[in-house]
Length: 296
Image (cartoon, rainbow, N blue to C red; front, side):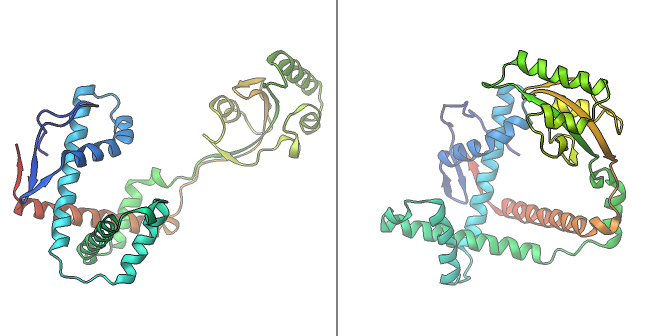
């Protein structure tokens, strides 16, 4: 991947020109693509120094725009006639995305229709590229299953119940803690958890039973308490941002490896998708090898 000289720092314009087979690429398209990529990109590469991160972001944005231009040029050379009904269907989806579509000028509508037709042709070209990609063999699927078994583990599940006193504008922290402490004392003295949920809890339904949950469905402090309990055990008072809780664990289902038969179709699709992506990458690389791409 070639680097971009004089790359833009956020808020400054790129200072370069790119042409692809004689077609000038507007700097704005690279700017636009960089901003589209930015949220996820900066999250993934947050530990990279900012100047390096910004340069790589614009390198990738430029690469995407160049590849898109090559595909569009390929589609423009395609003599395939797209049925009007297919184009109208694509435009109908655009109508829903752009409420002011009907207010566009006839010229803008014509350009949008041409863009929709071009995109359909691109999709057809890529579809043909993937058409001859073979189905993965059962041995390849099984090898993937054996080598990536951790991906096919069902999450550990627990079934907790809780007595909770919320902290909000109706109940301050002191009052909530006093109530939850009273519930805890009665539990120590032998009272049934379910009856105390009905007596004290702000969520008394089903005796506080939350059903089966996996880690991450509740806030971290609750998870830490609940997942470290043995079946039948009751926690100490737990503080979360919602208030005070006492947790009881009713049941635990350990993580279980899904059988090969259960995930065979999913793996087959994933491997086929990978082969398709590789075929598309190879096709685009072939277009690049034949293209004249100039930067100045």
